[in-house]
Length: 254
Ligand code: NDP
Image 1 (tube, helix red, strand yellow):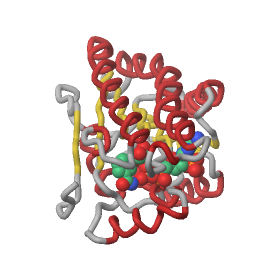
Image 2: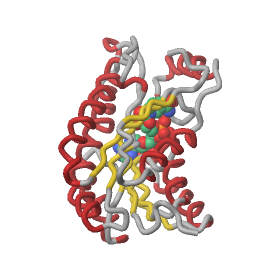
Image 3: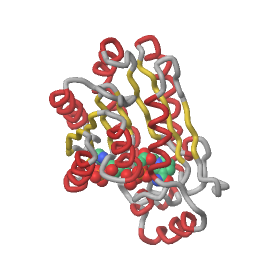
């Protein structure tokens, strides 16, 4: 039986945990060869083994994509190994909550570096390959999927810099969608509500209990729920462009 993504190559950032990990696994099951990009090598190797045990193909690409050279290199290694690149999922990100004025040195920079600069560098490096895939690839379409957030639509106290980055990703994605539409590259934004991942664990210790209490109060989403949404975007027929998907837990009021 043929799968929707047979013969295609997908690069997923943030593949060592959470949404990126679930997405890589899901897209591999649909036939794509997947490049797994993040910093934690052992986690990526575990995921690669899992994907291969399910009959898929995976490449471990250990990289901190907050520098331009590293992002270029991650794309280069993917194309060198698989010969092409049809789909990019920019999932790597950080959310460090807390009042703006109290943030310790380096917190804003960490979010801006990965949520914005990492996306820009990786996207720039990938674009020529995505354009080529849209021209010559088996599906005659290519996809760039940016993982934004409900925090890219609704700003809340304690999330100022995270909101800045995710509102920014939404604007960037829409502008880029218009630029790339004539070249056959679809640009989509997926906006998860609260998902049970490692994201909240990076919050400063004194604030972590509050964040965990909010997450623990309802049945939140699972990473696989967002992977399903991403899969819908990427596997849609070339005549269909799913520009934006906003997925919240049923029990989520914020
Ligand atoms: P996780 O913390 O589980 O995953 C974050 C991923 O980003 C990890 O794989 C991490 O890998 C990677 N990463 C972080 N910094 C870098 C870096 N410098 N270079 C390369 N990779 C990096 O969180 P989620 O899966 O939840 O988050 C994925 C995306 O979803 C993020 O953009 C987040 O903002 C968004 N999101 C998440 C929500 C949630 O409730 N969980 C809600 C809305 C949006 P490593 O440490 O190995 O480098």
